[in-house]
Length: 371
Image (cartoon, rainbow, N blue to C red; front, top):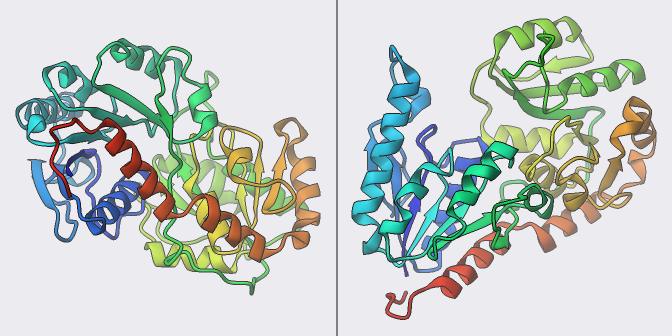
């Protein structure tokens, strides 16, 4: 089957990228290529996937582009250009699979195409995103996929056709039964602030720090720092011999996937102390693949990925720090082998690739090419 993957322009796609959306695209494309499909990627010129044709919209991804006087105009111009290229070449393929950030701009040309266009919604479905995506509900060749059942529930207006979970590379995120005496938190330090000017902390780093301080635990932190002020104000003052930031403080996660996997393999638990409605949470699945249980608040997809009391603990958000402490006391009751088996069965890369391949065939026009 000839498949066009429409990628994001914010980041390039390659084997080293650590951000969730481009990483999922890379793994999916590689898997589909191995299955014998003819794949092309419409995205950035600095993307590279072995054996896959890259159709460049721009030479480099947004995060590596030079500064523009008006970044909003520049980026929306490039995104519009991507949509117009899609309009020109889309009918040369059997299926178009849209992953662009944001998801909706390419949909403006879907009605000009004759082939099915599948859009995986990676972002949290806010009322605003739900409203605009629902504008495309009645276009007959337009289909939406959510990445978890919890994610789908946020779509009050948008018609979600299927739910397909993201998958984990279990060969990279290898099992380890041997753990060291630290807990791990990895996430994004968001720029978003509330009305009082406080950082909203959607990934919940302040909960993780509070838990470590009140239980005198070792905690390793890492991630991408979108706003340095957030780090300087809410994280750095708490760093110590027991609470450590791993890797450079950067707007991009500069630890390699292998470095992240090693941290996950040795951790006693991964902390998913989120304040927002997590669409999927790939780090949870990766940690469990390494045999590391997850302690997380029951928000978004946490209870969908974590089997409470078997692969970790799902803590009611209203229980706050006391709920986290209770889970921490019982973490040794979780068997690393159960965590690994759960991911192999439910959230492997192979499962994700097979699920997408199946729906491609479900959508495939009768006159479409064969593998």
